[in-house]
Image 1 (tube, rainbow, N blue to C red):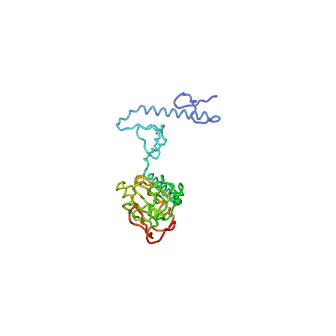
Image 2: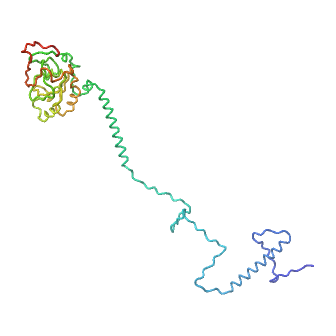
Image 3: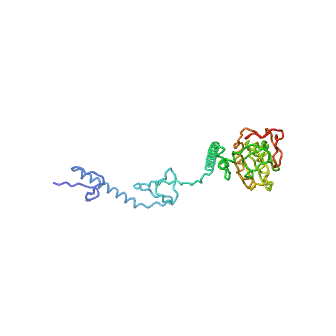
Length: 316
């Protein structure tokens, strides 16, 4: 004998639609759950029908109800809380590359370091040059002077002539750099003589280590004064005009000679520095002692000859 079950709402067959996410039941429990699901669907359908039959409320301020099934989109913010400008299409999360600002070259420190470096090199170079210069002998310095003639190397016989004689003498060169000479020497305490002097006296001064500067009488006055400034007040220097020389200016030390055309020639100072006193054959003998001559004139003054002193000794 079969039994019939009454259902509210007529002869509607029970729904066999599986409930989403429901797990299947064992045995007869499946039918019971199906019946319950069917009843729930019918109830929901009835409620929706009643809602649709109600007239819609007229209001101007009503807002649409949010659908609980739809979740609001998550707003993405830029890193660090900064808002992106409207219309930006930059992908979210993309890092902004830092802008590199090109700075101008700072020339101040560079110029300072360069100046210091140049000064340091100059000081080192000058110190090295001084050491080199101080290590040179006077002969080395003389050899470096362009145009200088060293008769000690080219004419040793001439350089060796140094007897003391009376009266005027003849010389193979003009002005001479060596040879027999008068017993009296010309004063050489930085004396600038305005007229010619006797060669025989000047040679004796050179034997003591003096540098004798001669010039042609037609040398311009300003150049004469330039030479005079180098001589005045400086021991073992003397200067006088010499009419017969072939160049405007000539410098003599015992065994050495340099001829130039202009008083501003740097070799004039080089000659004086290298050879004054150094070229002496009688070092240490001053230009201010003994029978010295201060007068001008090309004829030698034989001081001591008339006193019966006889012939002066050689090399004195």
